[in-house]
Image (cartoon, rainbow, N blue to C red; front, side):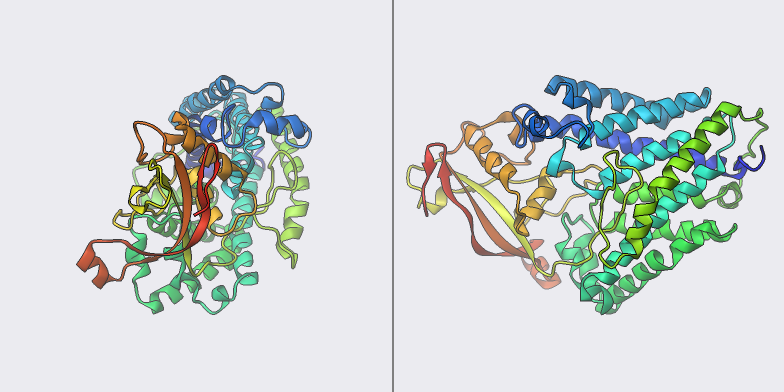
Length: 479
């Protein structure tokens, strides 16, 4: 069945399967480390309460059957092991049904986590990972040629991801249209990295060029992913290079990495050999089994049927950003940063063990792993790992409506809860929990190069208000 086989995409398949599996690996490891403290039986938003009010058909998950932290860890550890085997390429050495089955298990396992993860799992790259895992399941194993329909559907996924993000920006804040968005973004993005400070201080003409380049990559290049070769490979290379720039300048979990991986669906073997001239040609394969053809075509038809609403969303004036149109997170709408915040606000959480709440010298700050806190501390690199608590703190400073998790977070600090404290970089009260907790809001900005040379600081901050007045377990003490 020559029409069915994309024989020139063997190297692309290896990158797609192993790369998506690597992102699943990161996601499951993150669940092992963070889920119990955030969403477990004693978490900030406990899953048992969620599944008690939300039905399975609304949010399918194995945890509707039963939830325990032990069961969550069993699912996450199993996902980690399966992901690692796929990254190593071991199941791909077997029959085509084997990697298909394992990727579908990853999809079901991670879907079960996301669908009970509430606000801590409400990010677009969760749906992207789920969709990508489902689609690459049908790429088969090394025994068969990559199916052409799946290769092209993965290009459609990249198109929705990039073109959707470009449209969100053009339809969003004026800063994207007047080319000033990146005057601010490197400073106000959710979690800057070590390079962000330096890029922020580049000339404004450079930042205007960044915006122009972004519009070109997201609004023009995606159409060429469907062009004949070598044009499609060149288009993919442009997408990959733009994503590497985002990797270099920020912390966006695995969003940029999985986009890079998926873009390889448009890179054929000739392009790989042009760069890596020692790569061998794909060997002869047996005829593709009819059952595999039928399953892949059925999956393709199913995915194309689900594409109707995302396609309509792209051309809608009320375009949705990072939206799922079904409970299984398949064929989603993507896009981010339709507007860029121009000021950076941070919530600083502090505790005091003094009897007098007005004794300022007794207040000590809790330090988070990734978000700005101590002005002297250089921003760190964490992506592709996702620090969920730190990201929610960024949204909290922007005025997030749902703050139930933060209220519980304060209680956990007052209790000296071990799993919660292990989510933080610094616990200023290692011996015993404080008497009171408060949360202050600060306006942060990067130091200028001159200020940095003089002080060694990365940030300058100014207090702008009190988010939570001093509170203890027995009640509230107004400042």
